[in-house]
Length: 222
Length: 328
Ligand SMILES: Nc1ncnc2c1ncn2[C@@H]1O[C@H](COP(=O)(O)OP(=O)(O)OP(=O)(O)O)[C@@H](O)[C@H]1O
Ligand SMILES: [Mg+2]
Image 1 (tube, each protein chain N blue to C red):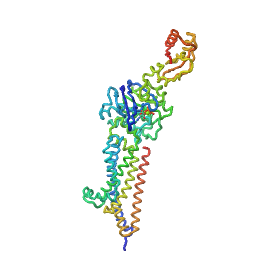
Image 2: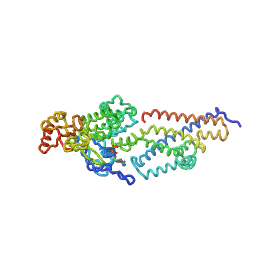
Image 3: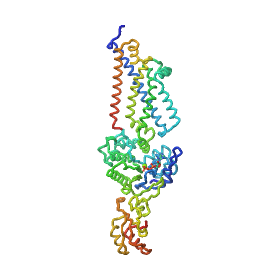
Image 4: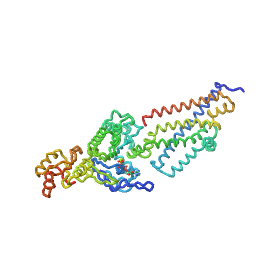
């Protein structure tokens, strides 16, 4: 069989990486925004929170746990109709953003909730007795004080998204996962497969290192 | 002025009820520094947390500068709280903010403009002596410096009341004195009313005008320091200037003397013994600085019991010299 060399496959790999970058970045942004919103909602409505609401906390928490406990592949398939409704198609990198984000949001929401729980109650009370509103406490105290934990959690989530994106690739999501299936699994082109693995390792390392650097630069806040 | 009227706070946890504050009524006049002493678990913190409504009293009312707090709506309570500064034992500074931005926080949330904020922060940094640490983060400060930031932050919005819960308990003695002196200076220059909670009588001696004693949730005694010290039966006076327990000797010859100036010590006693022809021996007691003035309490024993007229002469003679006499 006439196989492509890694050099010949490089343009295709780069295109696949770009697709992975696209779907993961957009999914990551959506995850950060909605994950923070959900995490804050959980923290505020929890018993002892600023806006305790038992029913909301329990129902919302249960929904998040259900989504979190689904294996990503199953979520991916189950969400096909939703994706088609939002994006217009269930195939390609843009369509993959929907299940990626929905898979990562519940995880990140719990990360956010935990990071917010770490803030000493006294700081929140200090803001309260100065007359701060709940909104001001969230924006000016809780999120800034929790920032190092949030960045560490976001790094974790980004890496997880890259893993998920490879899985999305296998069912037509494009990106590096799709690339690896085509070369490594369908054509047994091991050198090209290894090249794609190396690229993924490098990307994950870069993300982790960047995240760690940011957390360290925030260390004076602890 | 703070008026606490019949405040009770009951906690209920899994069938267990704890009455942390039990029917406390208390008035602290404007510009006064009021200290609340009491053993651990007496309910001091709970009472203070009721004053800024971090805890909602189970019953009773709290009036600050004529405004009753317990019945306020959330929005009104928020603006009322801006008139009450709180200093915490563990500082509770925002670690993501610099010293300046911590101090600016109360102004930020009330929408004070940037330039006005900056001017006020500079003023407060100067007051607490931290101008050179303006851009440091709290984690880069010592405990005493952190508490200075805490005080500056509490004062930023020009509160009329400053509440301090064990504000110096995490600090060493020298730093404690600096912080107390700072509170005193602030009180004198701004006229802010201060309520401070402590378990150290030294704190009360150093800066308070009046004090209260809490026990099992109740305020068992309170009043101006001068009045408390003049009252021989006062347990607060006993904490401020201990004379100790009665001795084994004949109780009928024991007296407690209290005085508020230096002139009234040894010479007065020797005069009295010459006048009345009896020996006065000091059994115990001490002389302390209270509110910047000397005050003392002594337990003395006379060489013989005094009958009615002699007793009156003894009391009258000492009273003329500014010494209060009473039976233990
Ligand atoms: N949230 C709460 N739930 C139940 N009981 C409480 C709560 N807070 C305080 N208590 C109880 O109320 C009582 C008074 O506590 P408080 O903290 O006011 O005492 P304190 O005088 O400040 O003591 P310390 O000097 O140790 O700080 C204690 O018996 C305490 O266990
Ligand atoms: Mg306490």
